[in-house]
Image (cartoon, rainbow, N blue to C red; front, top):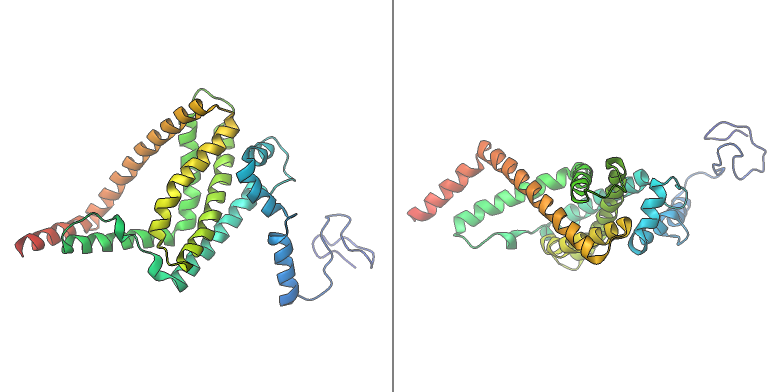
Length: 270
């Protein structure tokens, strides 16, 4: 009997391939054994995914440092973990759009204005949120090199990690935050909380989690980490200003500013 993965000839009673280690599958795929495979892979306490997820909260340096230093069997490797996180994000967006579209509400962030301006701002906000959700996986991937670059600047003078190693750090961090956000987002929608409210709550928690993880990775004391966090937020602020300028230019050329001006004039005339 040949192995279905590497084609090595196996003994009839073999349960695993002695060449590639793959498990020998004899039965046809059914809903039952597919569910059993899912529970063993993701819900069993001994599986790598759950161990990695929990360890990234309890001792993130054990997951990240061991991977960077070459020990890569204990936890899920960074690429696979990030891919799992993207799957969670995709499922989260599907569930929200399909079953809880009313939870996609960020209107409370619009400052008090006249009705016409609020309507324009609301439409603009919906457009931006829709755009971000449509390309969420791409944005999730683009955040990683940006965060790694900001960390490289913020932790200047500490040479523990090079830029490539910081990419690994933030791949794990971004994956962890994406998984938590996806699960929490569905729960919040089920409990009738808006995604906007959840975002306001989660943003500071994510900043604290990143600071906690980097503190353990760099082995800094509280004052040292506080200084680096302030520097990181300052760099983030500069990046936000640059992104806002770019968005402003896009809004200028796609006519959004003209619509806002016209709405203001109409409101003033009435």
